[in-house]
Picture 1 (tube, rainbow, N blue to C red):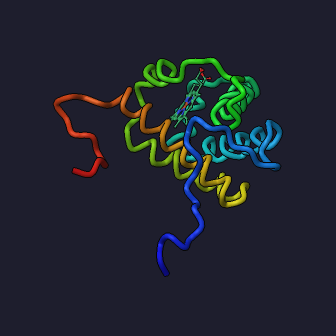
Picture 2 (picture 1 turned 120 degrees about the horizontal axis):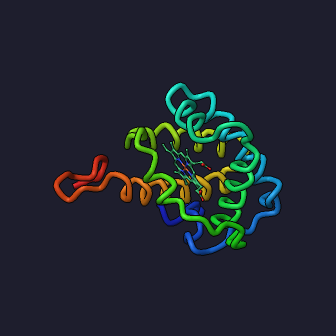
Picture 3 (picture 1 turned 60 degrees about the horizontal axis):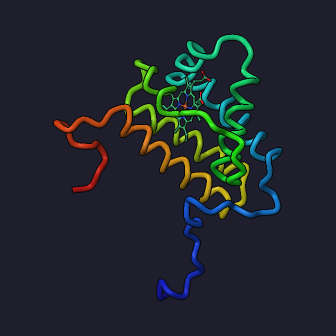
Length: 148
Ligand code: HEM
């Protein structure tokens, strides 16, 4: 089959809001809680988060719901600075992002229709890439995973 006859499944551009009947703040809140449930149960990531978020997780989950609402719905709910929040996490390794993204991908695929999962995963991968650059990029070292 010719590629041009396939429907275009690529996510909308990152600066456009996703408009979909099932995607609102309540839905994003469920997704965020499911995802952090997986992260907290992860042998590598769980202790990193437990070391930072002691006690009540609800403020973090609300902040992350705001963050994902801003990313996906473009509603301006989040106005924090993710880069410094991660720069201070000295125990995080570059490979930890693959674990993070694996949980995120499985969460999105479990809870969203495929075209919606594709948007969440695309955004997460873009932001993960820029966080990794901020945390690990050194001029004297090639970027791991980059082609060429
Ligand atoms: C291995 C990967 C990652 C680890 C271990 C990690 C860990 C953390 C931790 C411990 C916090 C601080 C929680 C708090 O004090 O409230 C945090 C905050 C945050 N993370 Fe991550 N994170 C990772 C990847 C990501 C990715 C890929 C994204 C986005 C797609 C992201 C988005 C955020 C945001 C928005 C905050 C809140 C920053 C703020 O405004 O304070 N993180 N993360």
